[in-house]
Length: 457
Image 1 (tube, one colour):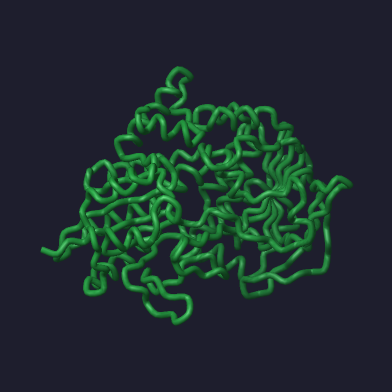
Image 2 (cartoon, one colour):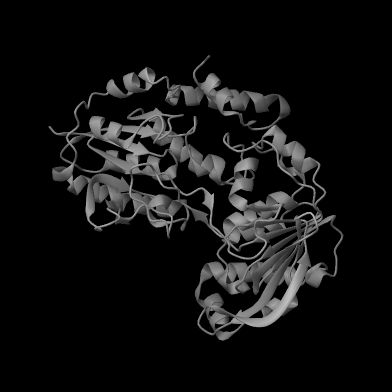
């Protein structure tokens, strides 16, 4: 029987789901899958891109763990594609490769002053508070008034972490260094800016509800933002998710803190709709001093147009959360405009001729861009796997497909890779760190320490 030796680059939900779907697919060949991850631990954005106070993520982690613990997928962590292992290496040892590397960079926002000191991409902030091993362990939180540009889930997650009292995060797996910085934060007001109206937001009801559950934080919405046009009313009437979001916002309109009147909490989280960022103004030292935005209004077809009215909100720090962007991979076609690997339903396309490149596939955000929730990742992977299975005639014919070849290759290059047993070791260590403090876990942050614990050194 024919055997498919498959490499998957990226061990987040996209890569793990792709492996699981292939192994469960009815097929006329055997399968052997190796999963490569540049971090020492698996799970990708579930571990390093989701706020630590999201309890529902535990269910996702459990599902991913079940797949890996089944024993029919090999995991190679702490292996950097393009440095430790190349595309030529994969062609030598596998029949095909699926790239599931996601999107972790912040999309750019082209307005004057966006590069000022104390202006950040929210993705970097998320990586910091999630204990990503490749970002600095320090973070500047010295401003009382902080701005967040964006109306998606990442914007709300980051805003919630900024507004939340640090002690309320202690039951989570928040790293110690992050807790200490948040504990000392002087923030009193977090302002979230979205250029569309309340009925056109990109976040989900769950993320919005969580804001209203914060201890000692008042929610502030503004009456002028709720003059709904016909398109907004239609969206509320026809879309269950939009209806729930509107119901939550309507309750907040009745709070004492509405319109900035002031409640009893020590912190406030303001939602500004119909606000298109125009300029970041700075002080004499080049630090963020304020955000200038233009009031927008509905254009009647779901979009917005500017009104010409400019407003300015004093801020000491600003984040942009307007989307993630993929990163190019050495030797792999890349669409610089959209931040994805060019593909047709997961089959990678060449940059110049738009022809299918045999043996190369993509799934997840590096395939379709940073849209959709984790559930979309499964259907996305099914599409890619369907083509992989049907493309059997165009797979590569590897020079050495033996399963012993990759460990020997990595060892020969001095790569300190981690395996699934090592992840179990690190996982158990983090749980043990949290136990004396009545915490579920305390995440190990430094990469070298993660590797050392994983390898039992």
